[in-house]
Length: 250
Picture 1: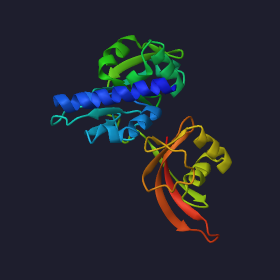
Picture 2 (picture 1 turned 90 degrees about the horizontal axis):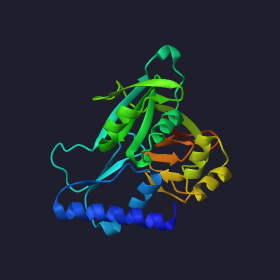
Picture 3 (picture 1 turned 180 degrees about the vertical axis):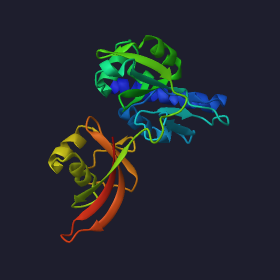
């Protein structure tokens, strides 16, 4: 992302926040990826305490819409959930996140109009900006070679939309680089390169500090590789290492 582009995004955030503060009515961003969420984190001083809340449509969403201002009681985020499933299970391809995202982008919409895409039992649950939801439902006819049947989901599928797989890792310390290296099954040097490239985020905030001690329940995202929740230390091993628990997003 070019510096000029970053400044325009920051300016837009400030405009939305100040408008909400001046009018007493909430304003909303589009869906923000990790890089944009990080830019918002850098503006907290300029925002001067203007209320803000982030939500992606369900707990655990990585892409979120941010609301500025104090909402009316029960005021929802402008997000709709679209369920896309094969019209014929018998002849359906095994759909992937890339298949669904490619089909969405093929409609000519901006990536910022769509939030997370979650696949469950070969059905895709797509979080969409409310103003684009009807358009997508009317025009998203297929993904890969599979004809889709679309419907709005008033409720999430039974159980957690995001599945968390508990894992126990053995690490030298609670540092970010140690835990991320064990999670990715890479060396600490490899992880440090990812950190220096700006690909590692803690709770949506980019970090360049591999030696940072992770706090319990921190969400660590490594762009292109996955994410996990750090749950904390379990015990010290006989060899003086630490057994820690994480929950991996699946």
